[in-house]
Structures are given as C-alpha cells and as structure tokens.
Length: 494
Image (cartoon, rainbow, N blue to C red; front, side):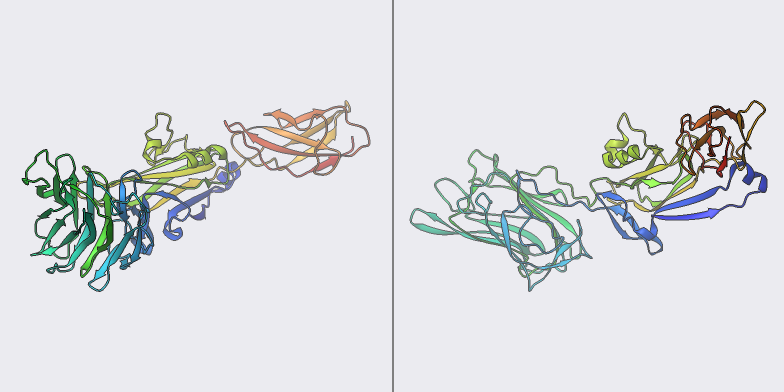
C-alpha cells in the first residue's frame, strides 16, 4: 500500500481559520503487488505498467471425499493424488506457463509418463473392487495426435475358478480419435469375458479439449463427451442396447498400475476419476467469482474526509469488477469488517452497510477505511476481468488548534481569573482548562474545567502562596468530539 502526501498552499486567511490541509493519496496495487490484501479465488498476473493485476483463478478441481477416487490437478509435482488413494511412482514434467486450469499442467514428450498405484483398500483399482457409476475426465492438448499414443492404460489379472484372465482399460489415439476400450472389465456374475469400445469425434492438434467418459450402472450406458457435448454412447449389455441385463465393472485379484501419457506428446490438465455419473461438469476456465478485502487503512485522524475513490480495471465481454468501501472512527468496527467479509454474501446481506465507490458524501468521514471488491467472469465468453489498482484521495481532518494565549491574574475580589484567545480552528465548541500543582501534571479537584463558548473563567478556593500550573485545550462540537493539544503552560501563585 503506497501513500503520497501533497501540501496544498492556501491563502493566509484560510490557514488562520482552518489550519494546514493535507491531501493524501493511498494506492492498493502497483508497487506493493497487492501483498496486504486478502484474496479469495483471485491471483496476481503481470499487467499494466509492469505492475501486477488481479484476475480470477482458473477453475481447479477439488477432491470430494465421498466421490473422488483420483484427482491430479497437475499444478506441481507431487507424491500422491489429491484423493490420497494412489501413490505416484513416476512423474512427468510440469509446466507453469502453459495450462488450462489452476496454475500448471503435466508435460509429456513420448519419453516420460505418470504411473499410479493404489495404496488404499476402497480405491477403484484395488483388488476385488466392484464399481457402480463412474466418470473419468481430463483436459488434453495433443501436439500432433499420432497412431497409438496412449492417454491412459491399466492392466490387471482376475480369476474365474481355476482360469486366469487378463483385464485392460485403454484410451489411445486411432485415426486422430480417442478410442476407449475395456477388455474383461464389464462382467456378468457368471462370465468375466467382454469387450467394449467407444470413440468420439476427431481431435484437432494444438487445442485444449475436455474429455469425459461416464457410466450409468443402472442402464449400462457408457457415454463419451468432448467439451461437454455427447460424442458417442454405447450400452454395456449383452445386446448392446438398453436392457435389464447390465455388465458392471469388476477388478480382479491382481490389479496393476495405472499409466498416463505413455508415448504421448502434449499437455494434460485436471485429471479426475469419480464414483459418480457426473452430470454437471462445467468446461469453463472461469466458473466462480472472486473477491478481495484490504487491511484496515489508518487515515491517522478522526473524521478524515474521502474526496474520491477510483480504480483501473478491465472488463472484457460481460465480466465485471465491483469495488466497495466502508469508513468508520472505530478501529474495532473496521477490524470486524475485515474479519467477517465473505464476498458477495456479505455485500448482499440485509444488514450490509458497504457502499459502492461512486457513493461519496458528507457521511464519508472517519479514521479507519476498508476497501473490498468483487470480480465476476463472463460465463458465455469464458473470460476474467482484471483489476490494476485502487486509489483513495482524502483530506485529513486535523484536530483543532489550542489557544495561543493564556493568562491568569487575581481580580478585585481575590478570585483567580483565567483568560485566553479563541482557537483559530472552525467548529470549536468550547475549552477544557487543566490545572495542578506540578508542571505537566494537572491532577487537582475540578480539573479539567469545561467552558463552553466563553474565553475566560474564574477559579476559587486555591491555596495562597502555592504555585499552580495551567494549560488549556480546545474541543470541537462534531458527533465524534475531538480535542487539540495542550496550549503553552503558565503558572501563578494566588
């Protein structure tokens, strides 16, 4: 957060009446790279002028304990999948410059591959596993689809009485199409033998496409979708059509490893396998909104006035940025605003007092300022807005000036009369007269004495010959009362 100060030269009369006025500018973003701002579903990216802009994070898969079997976001090299069911025995290279979602992608160049092995009972590829519904999905960017390039392969062994049989799941390129084949995986109770194959539309090189294979165990429907659009459907039944006799997936007693990307050249992102028939998978890069909340910004003086609030942003398509603010004289209230902020839910709350940047009036005063902002993607064009920086221009509300003259003397009746000149600051409602028996320590019965409007007062009952010390403060009559510094101290012996 960057603060710039400019002293505006005013004519002498104004200086006398209101004191020196300081116009301050606060910037969030630019030099500080948004480091003090709490971000939710947002990230920084190189932007205008060599500074960092805020944009939405690309949609990243999240592991759901009840349904996820394998989750590989491919944002960095890891030792196991995010579901915790499988150990990664071989890793490919990872790219943080070219990816579809999250912040990275797996990079394959024919020589490397990813190898998974089940480490927990209950994983779909653990021994004697019986499957019901399932979905397999991933983003794929092939450099140039070649015959036989394998995207996924699994081999295992099962036993039928005294007979050993092999099992295989294979997803590979044939004629630029991804072909899924299942050998002896879909089984009837009395027979393990089966072979099913499904392929979709041709895959173009050097393009990201989302691939999903999903299975409905009630009907035996095996459906292949590309970019969310059905490309092919078959039924794992004896007739190949929908029927009551459904072949269901079973894993034998010796499951092998899952191999991803063998012989493949290109990128893969966001690989997931679930125990559900996934009906609502979005293929957008940006599915969710994001928000940010600033720390409490101290404007140093009570009732400082906001002049302007501005932002530099980009909103391609129908994406949008909505900045808000709140200002208060209570530090506790400001800190609660920061700690309780939950983005859109907070702004739309019936008790919300957050105000858009454009709404600045006489109520826009306080010492503690909090800024927030919401970013929304354009779902149709799948683009994110960007926020370069926020700027705040405000004028500090300086405390009133104390009187510059204070005098004490006895009057004819023996009372002590205190006189002073009025404060030069506007809005002063009265004064507080402090007195005591030691310099700078104004601890005495009746101290401080409050005087409204007048510039004099009388004090009785002080001990003769004893030395007393006096100083005076001004105070304003605003809703939040403010006090000046002490005036110059004087002393007298009554």
